[in-house]
Length: 175
Image (cartoon, rainbow, N blue to C red; front, side, top):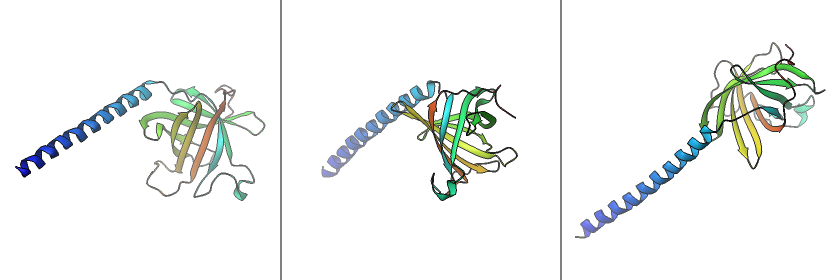
């Protein structure tokens, strides 16, 4: 009789736990579907520090400046980032991003980033997040054709925040 009571309690507890997981999974799925269904626009001016290999933004190694500023606009393959020079003039197109998927880290984008003409481009993955009305884009990159996320550090990391509207267009970008 005691064994039957233990089995009954176990079955009831399993049912309660399973239904709570199913309920929370269903809630997460509907939240994910709602976020994924909303169009994400990266259009605007994005700016923030970049660093790599364990260095944080700022510090002695940033004497020449560690800020990246791009005007991101829609283009043929998704989103293109036009570099904004220190004098606020439009530079060259250095970022190409295409939407990939929704993840726990935010909406993912895959692409390429070229910091200077002729330099090795970075293969990048960017995560878009919007919280309390402010949008951010966290970028990880590595030279080469593939970004391996199982690394401890990356040659390129950037934390960009949307700072306003884009003024550069693809027509104004220099080559």
